[in-house]
Amino acid sequence: MPEAIVRHDWSREEVAALFALPFNELLHRAHTVHRTHHDENAVQVSTLLSIKTGGCPEDCAYCPQAARYDTGVAAQKLMEVDAVLARAKAAKAAGASRFCMGAAWRGPKDRDIPKVAEIVRAVKDLGLETCATLGLLGDGHAQQLKDAGLDYYNHNIDTAPEFYGDIIHTREYQDRLATLEQVRDAGLKTCCGGIVGMGETREQRAGLLQALANLPEHPHSVPINQLVPVPGTPLGNAEKLDPFEFVRTIAVARILMPLSIVRLSAGRQQMDDAVQALCFHAGAGSIFYGEKLLTTGNPDTEHDRALFRRLDLHAMEVVEQADTVHADLMEAAPSGCGHGCGCSAAA
Ligand code: SAM
Ligand code: DTB
Ligand code: SF4
Image 1 (cartoon, helix red, strand yellow):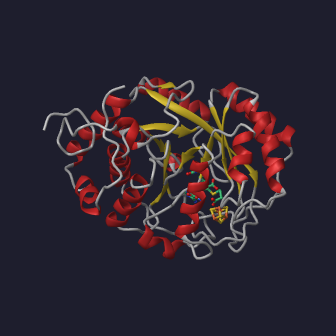
Image 2: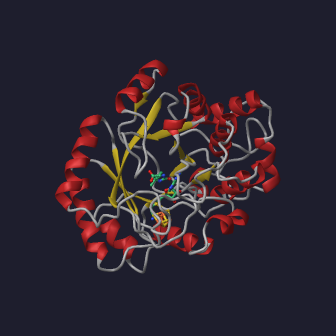
Image 3: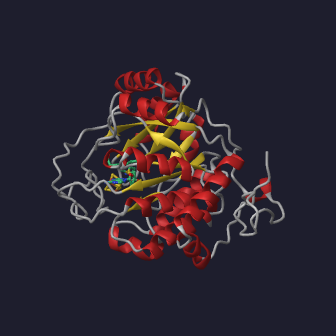
């Protein structure tokens, strides 16, 4: 394994300075980090399924599943194991290596956990990696899910700490950090990222990435979502982010968390193929694959297969990553470019 600097002390100024680099310089540095630590032609492929849809009591301003917004999403109770299994088999047959299950809960109740655990066990038995995103976890939940065969838990910090209160009022940033701690303590791999294009400033995008990179462990998987504006939500008319700013966000995430897998997450259906190609060049190494995210659209699988062919990309079989993406695994003296980003570019 090549040397990497896994830092947890990024300052806002350092992150902002990366965002402010000339575009070509930023992409060069990010791509250099990417190919130093990852196969630049391999993309991890995950398929999402909403196993419990809509009717959520929370007020996340971006979310079509919040009961309080009129978005046309019909509430559905937790799916039965067999129905989930059929979807997981189809995802595997279509080429996904990970199956991510989402529930529109503030968090699961104690009584929900055995049901979700049964689902996780069945999906894991198919030979798929498993991921769940169920909201805030209570005592013992993470461990029970781990025991059932869960590999990853997704819980996003969503945005910069100082912008969070503009987007969500029904739970605190601190609550999210507590759930992430439970996830780490149970030995689950973390999937944690955020959303851009919600009206935040570049400084706040830098704040989101700074907060992710300064977590006690870098998340194994870092989903960078572009807001999917859904009519009826408070952000339904949000102004679209400049696509190059989205690419910059991927690139900076790549540099800050060199061993993590950065996911080009929600928003691909609204994105040109050329912008996606730039995201892959900038260090995105994962996508959601399948015609639906949770409730909104995603590119057709045939379109994605063609995109992979056109870009000479291939699907990663199973992620080979250390159990923890942690400083003491990879500590090394600053080298290469001299910016502490771990890349091998000359200064
Ligand atoms: N209810 C759980 C929770 O909020 O933690 C799990 C599911 S929730 C839908 C998972 C994540 O999806 C959110 O944290 C958010 O980052 C992302 N998300 C939801 N709506 C989105 C949208 N319209 N555009 C982009 N990302 C979105
Ligand atoms: C993540 O960061 N993005 C995914 C997954 N984790 C759960 C969800 C995107 C949801 C987009 C809106 C929807 O389809 O409802
Ligand atoms: Fe509920 Fe999750 Fe949507 Fe927030 S993001 S409203 S918690 S489903």
